Structure formats: structure tokens, C-alpha cells
Length: 238
Image (cartoon, rainbow, N blue to C red):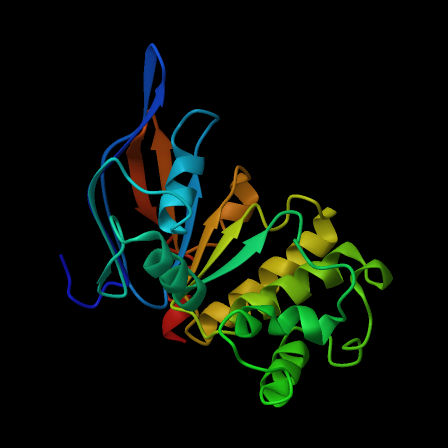
């Protein structure tokens, strides 16, 4: 395995114990992702796609195997260390945006920094820069209910970048958006990736996955295929 990979998974198995039944959601998965990659993970219900998302996002632990995130062995970290690594190394973008309704745009962007004990006052310019990056520099005092779905997802993307994480993990990021707005969000991901941001996107949509450089398909808890999209493979290098 390459030393420069930011994600290195070796022999990851995840078994859910449901009493009399044990379900093997992941069955010895190996995976490596390089910095600057744009990867789509696909799979039907029960394929292991959601479990893979939870493992990659340090939201769940593997039953067996190794997971190195930016060189840190996170597979079996204590809870507090794992939470700290997750907060610093991973930016999340969810289908349902997960914004705090009572906070303004710039306050929502600041949330990951807040959990690191960093004040908005000291990092206002950084958060403002991110608002401008996603095209919401003129909406920083608005609250989520005053924004369209696409604008809310832009806030979520800016928030995911606040801690300058190793990677963004996006879970069906266009799932709640109409096709035109969804394309705008994917265009934004393209631009971020072109600047070097690593993106791992879980999706069921073939058209959405076609925007990625690399498409991984899950089946029965294993990687069934791992292919490079020739038309997108050079994005991160631009």
C-alpha cells in the first residue's frame, strides 16, 4: 500500500450481532484512496454501502481489520480520540443538510470550529471566505428557513470545509434536490476537487457517480468493482 494514501483499509469486516442472527455487512474489504481523489461508492440496499460510509466516517467501528486515516490507526481508537479525529479529519455533507435552524449561515459554517473550541470572532474571516467560496457571501446573516434547498446544501458544504479536513464524505448530497440544483452542487464538488479537495461520495445515482474520477461498487459486503472514469480521471490534477 502506498504511504501517501489518506485512506487505507485492510481486511475490514463488520458483523452485526442481532441475537440469534449475525449479519456480515462487510467481508474483508481492502481500500486505498489517495489525496485529491473524487470517489463514488455505489451499491444496492444490503450491499454494505452504508456500513462502508459509517466506517469511513468514523461513525462506527469495524469488527476486524485496519483503518488508517491520514496515518492514524482509527479502527480501534478510544471513543474520545475517535471523536476528535473525526472532527478534525472529516467534513460531512448529508442528504438532509443537517443545519441548525436557529443559527445564521455563517454560524452554521463555524460549527466544526466551535466544537474545536475556536470562536467565530477569531475565525470570522475564514468562515466568510468559505461562504463566498460556495456563492453565499451575500446570505451570511440568513437562517436555513430563508434559503432554498440548494443554498442550504451549499452551507453544508462550506461547513464541511471549515476545519480544513483531509476529506469530505458526502452521503447522497443531491438526494433532496431537483435535477438542476443537484447539477449545481455537483459542479461545486468538481471545482473543489479541482483545487485538491478529496471527496468520497456515497450515491445510488449513476449520473451522479459519473461525475467522480473513480467508482466503487459494493455487493454482498465486498467491493465488486473499482473502476476509473476516463473522462474524469484528471480533475484533481488540474
